[in-house]
Image 1 (tube, helix red, strand yellow):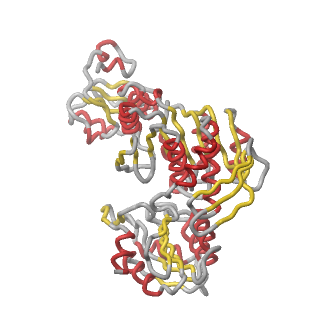
Image 2 (cartoon, one colour):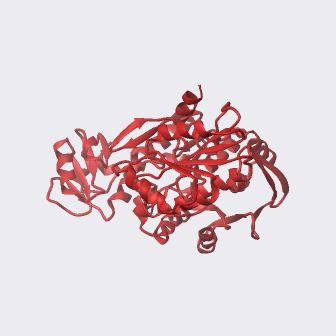
Image 3 (cartoon, rainbow, N blue to C red):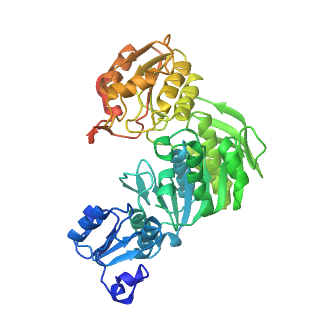
Length: 465
């Protein structure tokens, strides 16, 4: 492909034959174009050394064949689209954003679409799925090149819809610049990622960007930021609520340990049951119902799909055959997420609610004591341990958590997570519920800069056997 077909440049440069494009100087090969999204002369030097034939930059550094652009990140997105032939334009994109509930809502929508006979691609935290084929993932929302590569494969496989989680990082970093969404969903906004966004206002504004890129919006207006968002955007929009006047309202809610059911009040009144516990499952499934209606899918198909939904790995996942007590694995790693999962199982715990959790290293430190306090208020016994400490000292992270833990709350500190899980199982009594929070779908721990295999399911079943 000629350079001039993917970026405007002088005719001489435009005739260069491009073998690939990347924003990572270490991945440059002979014939590649390097896009310097970090404005780093050293990266450019590395790219040239590795064989780059042109550099896309915001500020000149006197390297050969530099092309100056206003926004390198946005340019990289546009170049990636052109490289793969604008694949997203041949499918309907549905984007889901919010602090909590993105993954579950995404998979509920996928279930409804597949029940209706549609071919679906999924891009998200747990994995990417292309018409039933599972592919691994690193970031919730991949960078622009990887994203368009996935779109290209999905188009080749015949996908009609792509349902994707859209993270605040992706929106802020321009990974989805140039995309257009048929429908965007806002689940909620609570404290997270303040190490990156610095404050809640910046976090909100990053999420809001998605709603300037869509035709339709589904918004949870019970969330204070959702209510604000609903009043600030101009696209076709519908609201969902459990408590307020809205386009979709859930009433007569019945929450059980294995499922949630309710009546949805919209144009029609229908009974909904979804095989997930908790009030958050009502919100997530109500969003999915609204999306299905926007896409003009049959309501009976939607109801049937929700009833048959088997859940999402690491989201209120109840491990089977754990004896006379229950073990639940959940991804809750934010104050709101932890509060939601604890309140969900608090309502159905016959004996003690035992919580095991930690907090990630090199991430928002301000939420640690908040999560400690939440653990104190809703759990009967708390085990504080490591999550992904990364390059932080695990004991320092635990110390931050303990600042919020009420001193009278029965608790145990065990830094090593495997040891902590085995301890939780050893003290479990009949009808206890143990919640292992924070890791969810992850099958690893990040200690230092090393990713080590660690699957909580394996630890539980090995200990019980």
